[in-house]
Amino acid sequence: MLSPEAERVLRYLVEVEELAEEVLADKRQIVDLDTKRNQNREGLRALQKDLSLSEDVMVCFGSMFIKMPHPQTKEMIEKDQDHLDKEIEKLRKRLKVKVNRLFEAQGMGLEGTGNQEGRELSMSAWTLQSTVGKPLPGKPELKGFNLNPLNQDELKALKIILKG
Image (spheres, rainbow, N blue to C red):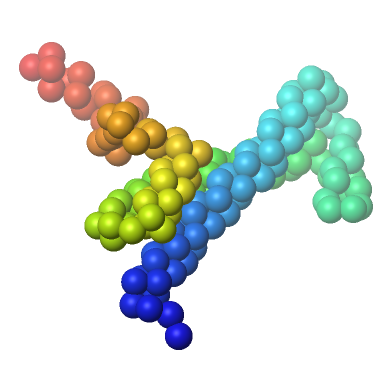
């Protein structure tokens, strides 16, 4: 049977570990989707260089090649690119929220325990923060405002408003 303090430390470590795993899983998924997006970009570029629009092209689906019409292939890859862009953007937004939750969980940690174990765990939390981009102890923390850039429509509306 663990002491109440040890149980609290264990719960804290489990929570931080679960949140960190979610962050790392999202980062891995973003990298995988970005790799696929780059492969699609290469395919689109190859199709643009190929001037014979009337010929069929060979497209790889998994482990097999299929002959498809040039325009249909280009349209399919462009749709896939749009889908990948949206999915990556959605993951990046979710990642910001998850990273903030992770940092909040680390902040609630073991500062007030007063024992050596608490100080060591607190230092390991700072080490984890530094690997994810947080400052080390004694360094000021940079906070963002989670701002998004203006899209084209918003920019046009703003220019119209400013012109009066």
